[in-house]
Image (cartoon, rainbow, N blue to C red; front, side, top):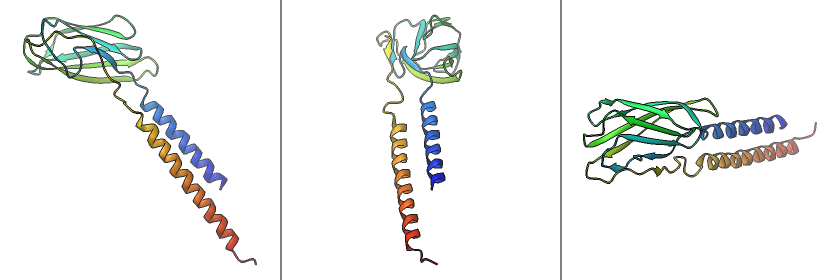
Length: 171
């Protein structure tokens, strides 16, 4: 019984460690143009603000026709990156910004992308805060429910084994 309890506890600790790791990557905290936005005016740069310290930031900007635009990526702080376009945006439509960075805390390479729409008649872009993609930490709810279920199963197994021992005829 003790081995069973020890195995259950080790499994739960492993699940908890994996759950924390899954939530530990850097991502965008703000951008201009923002993901999903419709922007206009003369756009010659894209601003990225990460939510954790990153390094080795690189990426690409793709126009609506699938052409990669000439751009320069400059990290001007631990969290700030400015993407300067060689020419202002001209073609209306959806643009893709792909960005790759190294998370300083865990040294993982993180790749992500977002889309925005260029419409010359729309307002100029503003730096917008990006809501946390993780939202409600469902991983912890799932782990909590799993812990309760495992505890109930262990308790029922313990009770069944205890009854079985009590019901055994003495020899």
